[in-house]
Each structure stands twice: as C-alpha cells, then as structure tokens.
Image (cartoon, rainbow, N blue to C red; front, side):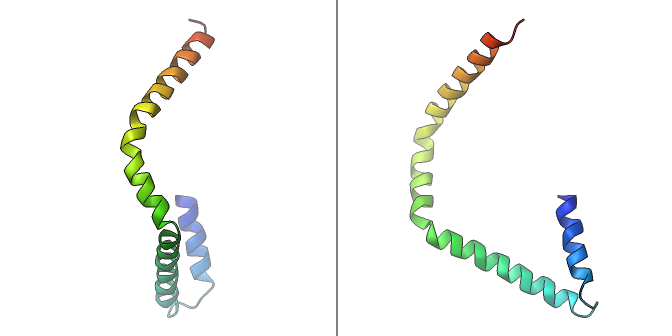
Length: 77
C-alpha cells in the first residue's frame, strides 16, 4: 500500500502545487466512474454471486477440509 501511495505522490509532484487538488479530484472521479461502469456491466453476475454465495459456503468448507487433510497426509509429523 505504501508503494502505491508513493507512486501517487510522485505522479502528483509532476503538476504544480495549485493544480494538485484538481488532479486528485479528477482521478477520484475517474476511479468512481470506472467502478460504476464495471458494476453496471457485471450487475447480473453480482446478483447471481450474492444469491449463490450462501449455498456455496458448505461446499467451500468441505473442499477446504479435504485440502487440509491432504496437506496433513503429505507432511510428515
């Protein structure tokens, strides 16, 4: 996370100090717009994921238990 913050600060340092707040606002708006567009494109898939996620929890637990058993079998001790 610190690396991303450093890159962002380096990017802002390209611009004069009086423009940096405007650049930050534009970047924030672009990020919000991008997230909105991604959600709008995949809205049906998100609804299906929300509906099917509770049903998949027992399956995921069983798969995790099987993986843990396999790892315990393969590791000595």
